[in-house]
Image (cartoon, rainbow, N blue to C red):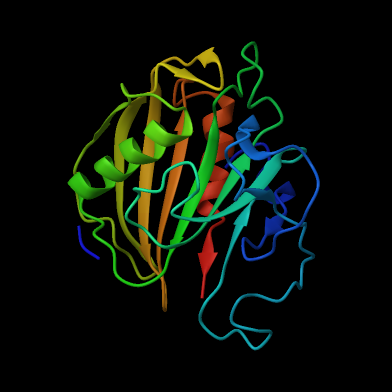
Length: 220
C-alpha cells in the first residue's frame, strides 16, 4: 500500500492491544460496531510481543476518568481509509459535553501493519477520509503543514506536523474549527500515527493534557 501537564504521572498506561466489553460505544455511533472500550491494563500487563519485550507493542496514557476505545483499521465507519492494523482513542470525560472545555478534544493512534504512505499529503487525505466517515460529513476539510524542521531524534519519532480540522457537524453537534497535531513514528515492526485534536487554544489545559499523553507514548 502506498499512497507536562497537571495530569503528569497520574496518567495510567493502557495497552491498545487489549480490548474488553461493556461501556458506552465509542463516539456514540451505532454504526461503529468495531469499536470497543479498552480493558484497563495493570503496570506489568503483557504487550503484543509477549512478556520478554519482543517488538510489536506500544503503550499510551489515558485521561483520568476518561474513556479509551479500540477499533480495527480500516474502521467500519470509514472503509476507504487505506490503512490496516489497529486504532485506539484517548478521550477526556467531557468529550461529548458541548459546554465543557474538553469537548471534541482527544487523542487517537493508528498502529499500522505493513507499509504506509506517511507523507504530509497522504496523512492529510487519511484524516479527511477518517472524519468524512466518522461524523459523517461530505464537507470535512483538513490542513496539515510540512514539518518545519527535522524532528527525528534517537527515539521512534519521525515527524510532527500541525494543522486544522473542520468537520462542521459531528455526533449531532456543531464543532468549532479544531487544531490538530500529527506525529508519525517508526517502531520496530510497525508505523504509528498519533493525532491530537481540540478546538481549544493550544495554551489551554486540555492541550497540556494532550501533550502529556503524546509524550507518554512508547513502542517496542
